[in-house]
Image (tube, rainbow, N blue to C red):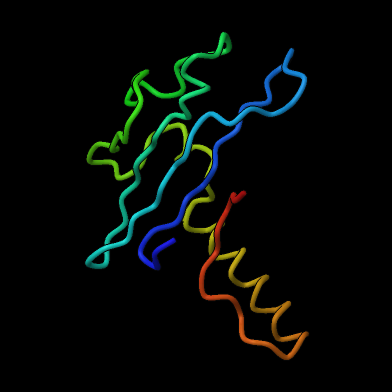
Length: 113
């Protein structure tokens, strides 16, 4: 994985599912001080009977799909902490690192595989 990109694996575990299933991969790209997101469905998920619209901007086809001018897809914006939430998370990480006599982490990944 390159330093300017990280992947977040998106799973479904809805009522009636025996176990979580991989839906696809949300990729965060960083370039020129900006971030952009793309999403790619898992090929097996596209053939699944549980297929549902996640976001109006994410269509049912394989391949990379990019978010509009919002920078990210609405479904994922709703599940990520806002500026205040990120501030609180960074403060907590700094407190924990100080207690362990370490430097605080410089990057937070919210969901990973």
